[in-house]
Image 1: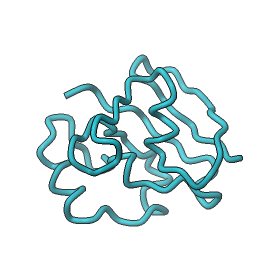
Image 2: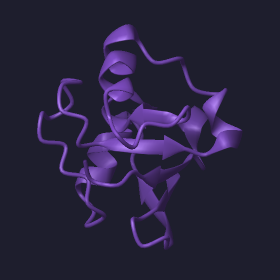
Image 3: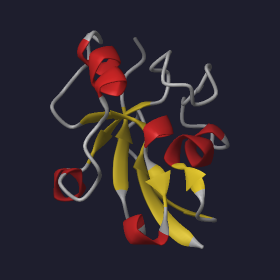
Amino acid sequence: MAVLKVVDRDGVEHEVESQTGLKVMEVLRELDYGVAAICGGMCSCATCHVYVDPEWASRLPAPMSDEKDLLTELSHYEARSRLSCQIDFTPAVDGLKVTIAPDE
């Protein structure tokens, strides 16, 4: 088990313990924080958009071109935006902190 720190859309931080080997989106989808994950992780809808905490941004693999293209079209895009379906929840990211982005 590993911990994912999640700041919901109301600004409340939660510590969620979950199994590794999932995508961050899969962890978030099971919670009631507003992550719909409509496409199921296919990198095509951006309903799993999160902001990665600055201290973690450089520790994650860079987004692939399809993720980057989709993110830059969003009105709430920021440099630390990521699709949580593209982030592996592994022991290496134990303690990762993300903020749920506003709905588009």
